[in-house]
Amino acid sequence: MPDPLGTFEYTWRLWLAAPLIGYLLGSIPFGLILARLAGLGDIRRIGSGNIGATNVLRTGNKPVALATLLLDGAKAGVPLAVAAAMYGQDYAVMTGIGALLGHLYPIWLRLGTAREMARGVAVLCVLVAAFGLISAGGYGIRTGAGILLIVAVTPLGWGGKGVASALGCLIAIAWPVGLLVGASWLVTAALFRYSSLAALVSLILGPVYAYLITDYQTTEFAILVAVLVVIRHAANIGRLIRGQEAKIVLGRVSGAGHADRIGGGGR
Image (cartoon, rainbow, N blue to C red; front, side, top):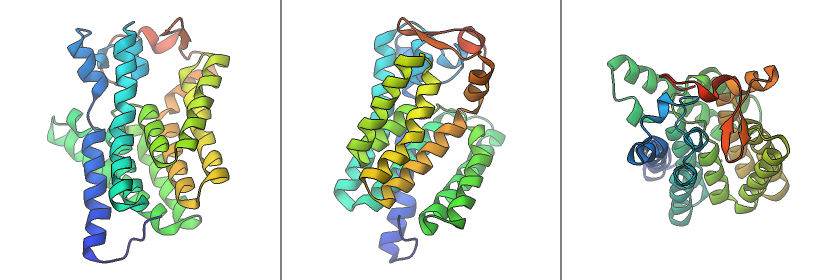
């Protein structure tokens, strides 16, 4: 993982420029923008209130949902790939995690009250500190401490659940891992017809695939990606256990519980 020490030219680009550029691009709420352009209204007031492709699909508009999926993946994967080509894998990792955090905690959806902004900045500072611990520590105590910090704040996310962006990151940093994760999602979704379960299973398998076919840096990155996304699915896990999670039915997400909820505030 990235060495936190080094020349100023190295560290400012690694710890500030790369994650900041990734974060700003990852913050673009394509689901919200595309839904409004398509005349579907505020996606945050439909279904689960989430801004991702799964919730866009609840409107019944498959082309918009597909476009959201592709753009949410590209906004994370493309800057990661560009950083890798220009500066190497260390910068790619930091850009990618910045983009994923941007999707989970989009600044463009928190340009409201000072209290909202303060909360957003606090959460992001904790997450950056957590990633710093993981980067510097590798496996071991510091990695565990970083994950504990992530677990503490990730449920506070106000953006998407991060599945498409996570997949985009994994494809860009190690395409065999990304393709295996995508295939795992498709198989699980086909067997059980739960989008959330498919996301959980596939991303938990991500670090396993990375460990078997890539290096430790990619494996650590896959672990962090999995932790971020899995914790953001805490509510979905509860609904799966209770048998209340929405299923994928005929190209739409349907089912008991939150699928037909209309109201403000995403989960």
